[in-house]
Image (cartoon, rainbow, N blue to C red; front, side, top):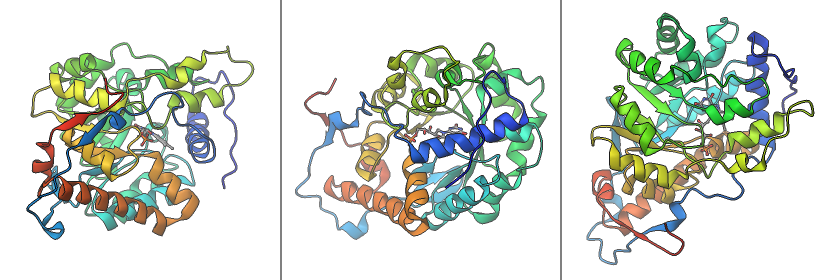
Length: 360
Ligand SMILES: Cc1cc2nc3c(=O)[nH]c(=O)nc-3n(C[C@H](O)[C@H](O)[C@H](O)COP(=O)(O)O)c2cc1C
C-alpha cells in the first residue's frame, strides 16, 4: 500500500529519519508477521467460572465506565500507533472515527516528529478534529523526556491535540535493536517524576510490548506516576519489527530478543499486587478479543489497550470491518459479564479466575 524510503543505518536520528521510520514501522506491522512466536500473553492460563444461574438478563449488562471524566461504552483504549508522516493522517482519521463510533479512547503515536517541526502536525490534530468528544492520549518516548531540559515542548504536544493524558513509552528493547536507535535511558525515571508534576494532565507510563515489571511499577509509583500501561509480551514484538529493519552491516543479534519480555497477564497481576489500589492499570499487549479483555479486567486492569489488531483490520479490510471487530469485542465482553453474573464492570472485576493447565 505504501512506498517507503529506508532509513540509512548509522543515522542517529534527524527529522527525515523520524518520518520514514514511522512509515516503515506501520508498513512492517501491516505486511509482515511481527507477533511473538514462542510466547503468549498468559491469559490462556486463566478462565472464568461459568455461572449457570446468572440472575440477570443480557440486556441489563452495562459495560460502560468512566475515563478521566468521559463515559466510555467499554473500558477500551486504542493504543498510540501513528502520526508524523504524510499517510498517517488518514490512518489516524479512521482510528479517531472508529473510537468515536464505539465510544472508546484514542491514542496517537509518538509525537517525536513534532519536536522537530510542524510539517505533519495535521496527522496528529486530525484525531481531535474527528473525535471531539472522546478522550485522546498524546504520546512521547521516555528517552526524549530524559533529554529535554524544560517541558515546554511536551506541554505543546498535549495542548495542540487537546489531549486528556500523555503516554510516555519506555522502549529500551526497541531502542537497543533499532538500527538508528537511541538506547539512552539514564535519567528517564527522574524526568518522568518531574513531568508528572509539570503537566496538568495525567502521565500514563507504558511499555510497547515487553512489559512493565512489579519492580519498575513500584519505582514509577514512588516517582508520582498514577497510570501504568503494562504493555506486555504476547502480541506485537517490537524487537521483531526492529530485527527486520536491521541491515547486513548491523551486528547480528540473538533470536531470543524477538520473544523477550513479560507476558501481559503476568505483568498485570504482578503490578496490581504491588501498587496502591488508586493507581490505574491499563492491560495491553496481545489482547485479541473481548474475552481476553474481560480476563484482564478481572485480573486487575482498569482499562484494556489494543494496537495492531485494530490497525490490521483497518488496513486489510477497511473501516466497517475494523468497526465490526471492535464491536464484536464489546459484545464478547458483555457475553462474559452475562455468563459470570456480572451486571457492571465493577462486578466483573470482583470475579475470581481459575488457573487452568499450564498456568504458572
Ligand atoms: C504500527 C504500530 C506503531 C506503534 N507506534 C507506537 C508509538 O509511536 N508509541 C507507543 O507508545 N507505542 C507504539 N506502538 C505500540 C503499541 O501502542 C502497543 O503498546 C504494542 O503494539 C502492543 O500492543 P498490541 O499487541 O495490541 O499491538 C505501536 C504499535 C503498532 C502496531
